[in-house]
Image (cartoon, rainbow, N blue to C red):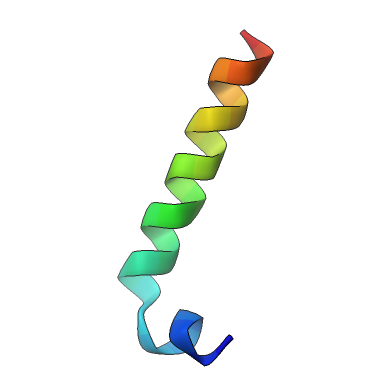
Length: 27
């Protein structure tokens, strides 16, 4: 959990990949 606070860029990348995966899954 602290890694998320210490590495915001990494969190943004993970969220982006998750959103993109959901987008591909829906379409």
